[in-house]
Image (cartoon, rainbow, N blue to C red; front, side, top):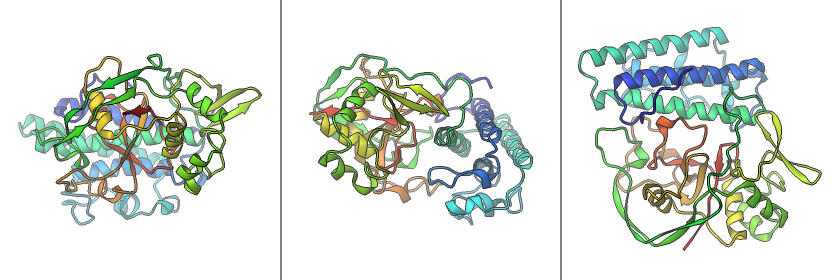
Amino acid sequence: MPIPSFVSFRSANAGQLADALQHARDYTLALFDCFAQAGYDAPARVPQLLCVNPPLWELGHIAWFAEWFVLRHAASSHPADARKGPLLRKGDDWFDAGTVPHAMRWKLDLPSTGAMKMYCHEVLDRVLDQLLNAAADGVAHDAALYPYRLVLAYEDMRGEALLAALQTLGLAAPPGLLRDESAWVQPSELRFAGCAVQLGSRHDGSFVFDNELHAYESYVPGFSMDAALVTNAQFSDFVADGGYHTGRSCRLGGRDGLLRPARTAPRYWQRDGGYWRNQRFGRLCTLNGAEPVRHVSLFEAQAYCQWAERRLPTEAEWEMAALSGHPGFRWGRLWEWTATPFEPYPGFAPGPWREYSAPHFAACQVLRGASFATQARLVSPKFRHFQLPARDDIFVGLRTCAY
């Protein structure tokens, strides 16, 4: 599965998109095979967890999403907006995430594993034919490429979710993803002077997610920020000092945070005598103190910051630091919690994928950056990821900040 040279999906041309779409599908199928080897291609064998979909349903849904927006020329994700019929008679009934409740995904009469893979190959073949024909006809302009860029971004995001599901279920990951993610720099602090920054994005022909629109100016006061993510060693000091049992932790997490389930350390940490070990894709490993702490909820991140007499950065501070060009500011190994609730920028309007942002405003928190599991073509300092505050199954960590 060769990795194509890095080109942002936001501005990729037709040929680059074709290569990237093929790579994304190969990666999706490689991840699916990891589940299938454990017998989890059968939905009935997959534990019903809120953070996991049955892999067989996920595989079909990814292909269906591409079929919907590219082959069926849907103007939006509204069920009535497809201009052509489905390849599978019951495809919409099975795979439309907007109409199929999460719990129902275990109960559907889905095609077999072999038939689902054939569907995936058929959709991709038709998508690539349509894309390359448009390029040959000279009509592969930015507006025409929007649906291809959208489905590529979506498959890459679902690929990261599938990898997180392998971790959740204790299954082995594809080779090459089990390396330690050690900190790049010694703990240090960077100072940024206050200034006006432009947040959001303008329509310039490249792809822009709806929650990144529109561009506006905001003044950010001066602040200091960690150069590196908080490490396991730093977080273990917080754990050893009773951080999971203090009053401030209880107030921050409540029954939906640190206290449910009752924990004494981050998810996947296990005490082994005088040492900590952690579970990593089904393997129990000695905890690497230099590695950034991962799989922490917003509540845990906030509690650590209060213990350290620091705070989480706002998303404006994070974006300012990422765009500053400061050589000491390193990011991209884990998603990072921010202090900013997920809200629309001024002038927001839902994009064609209507359910991407709008239903999640106010309920979710902004994460910034990227993780080791994020495809390089998806990485951007403008990307606004978001998750529910209690999520700790994803590849997320934190860095701290102060005025």
